[in-house]
Image 1: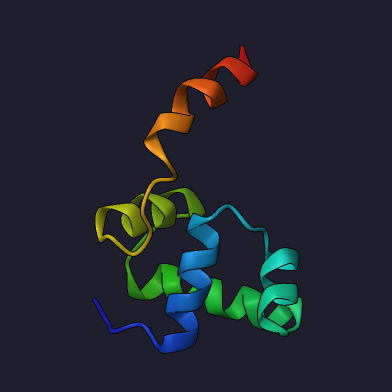
Image 2: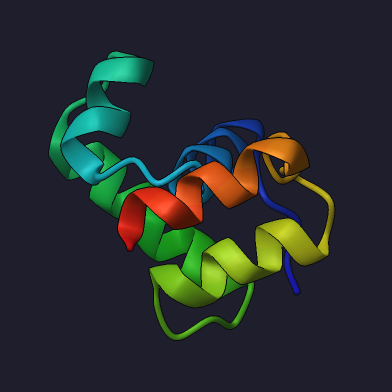
Length: 80
């Protein structure tokens, strides 16, 4: 696996937080086309199929941490 650049690492973190390309572009002051390029490079370098695998990898690698565990039952009830 190739090393991610700092920007690619930022994009991966925002993907894992659930942001879409438009939201990532706004957060990082980039065009959506540039974000799309960064996402493609992250997927290629990490040998991932899609954004879902990128989220799983980000958690597995400790790049992002789960939100407060005590909030989880409330979140599940909200979906019920």
